[in-house]
Image 1 (tube, rainbow, N blue to C red):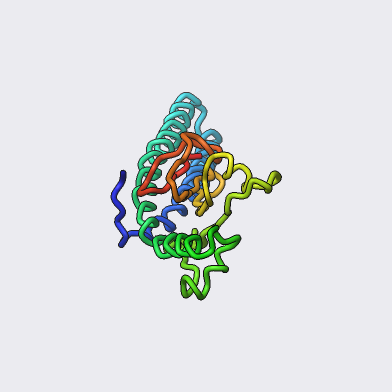
Image 2: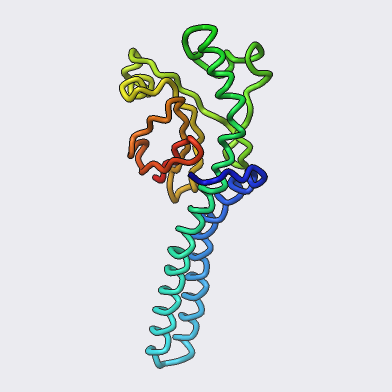
Length: 198
């Protein structure tokens, strides 16, 4: 388990900007380097120095992108762990609804105002909304039947993708009976939630 630093919740949303900008910025560096090398080719006749400079810049750029990807992803997982405490009033309200009604609600707005004053936000910049899907064996075309087949009573989730780089997400099932792989990726358990590395 990774501890949940609640005071860093807002940072995790801001982190999604880094990989979104990382690839375009590296492409911009290559473009500038390419223009500089093209100008050097017009001025200088010896192509060996240009080829070495181009190869080195490409290797360094690709190396930096890949070297930063894993640590940034680990940092995101650590910071995202705070969402467990932020979601507690919502999961408590879902359990209270089930205790009174004998089932989970069909939508989160059914909890308001009897069980919770309002549906909370995630506390993460860029990923503010919780998504909710109750298990439903009759929902053969949707996720409801898939959840029911796996023994999940509902799925509370947050889409926290890195833009075009990947489509990570977080999921909460009340029994915490997550599979090892689902939602197109490998699952890491973080404070009772399933963090999906897509």
